[in-house]
Structures are given as C-alpha cells and as structure tokens.
Length: 100
Image 1 (cartoon, rainbow, N blue to C red):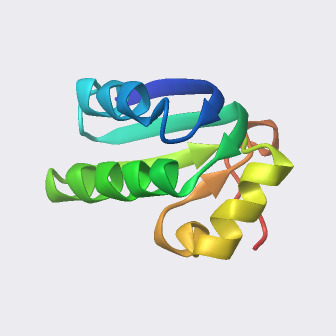
Image 2 (cartoon, helix red, strand yellow):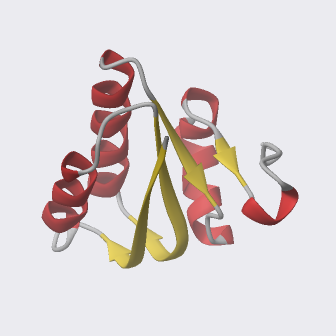
C-alpha cells in the first residue's frame, strides 16, 4: 500500500504545523510518498519535519519517499543531505532516483 501526501506552497515556520500534522495523520507504512511538486520553499523547519516523519515511518517498518521536488526544493534536499537518507524520485521517470 502506498499513501500519498501532497504539499503545496511554502513549508516554513508559519506552515510547518499543518505539514507535520498531515504527515502524522498518514499511515506510517509501508510507503508514505510525499509529493513536493507544489512546494516552492522548504525551510529548515520543513526539513526537520521531513526527518522526523522519516524516522517515525522507518520505526514502524515503512519507507518515506519524496517525489517530484521543484528545482529549488531539490537543491535544499541536496544541500541538507536528505536525498542520501530517503529516496527522492521523479514520477515521470517511473520511479527512478533523482541524480544528486
């Protein structure tokens, strides 16, 4: 089973509570797929929420994967090293990993 969560807009200190709540409301396994195609800003608060969700999902035997990040968001994922911790995929490429 795959559960999809789609985030849009800016994930920053003002909106991270809603983002975190959506991640926590989703079943933690087997795969939680977070669609980032609509996210234009991913702040440190958003990165922390993704890391916490990743740890929660992994603790329950699942996997969190990030899908279709905007180029600016992909740069944040690379700069923070998140793409080495959790899969980052492009849906149009049939699930292939995004190059680092």
